[in-house]
Figure 1: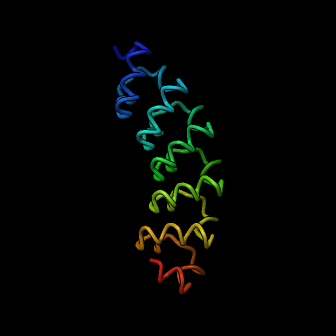
Figure 2: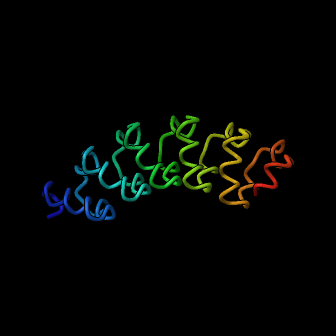
Figure 3: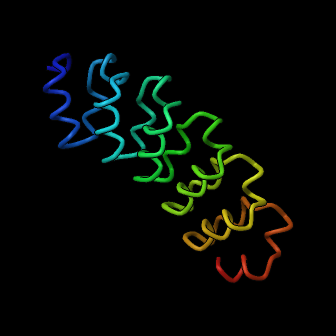
Length: 136
C-alpha cells in the first residue's frame, strides 16, 4: 500500500503525517508533498531534496508552520519574504533564519511579539531597542 500512488495521495490528503510512511518515490512527488505540507509544514523534513528547494512547496510549508523554515534550503532562510511569513506564523522560526534577519527590526518584532524568549537570538543593537523589548 505504501507504494500505491492513489492510496498514498488519499492518505496524505486526509493526514499529512502519512508522508514519512510512504515509499521514497512519493517524497519526490510534488502533488503528494504539497498536500502533506499544507497540513503539516514540518513534513518538509521528509521530502526529497529537490522539493525542499521548490518555492511553492516551501511557501506552503512555512505558511502552515513557520518552523518548517528549519528544513528549507539556505536560499529560503536568506529570503526576507519567506522568513517574514515563517516568523509571522511562528516566532520560533527566527533561530532558523539567516543571521542578517536577527538584526532586521520588522522580522524581529514579528517574532518576539509571539515569543518574548526569542530576544536571546536577536542582534545586540535590537535587544536594547525599547519597542522590541516592550513587544517581547
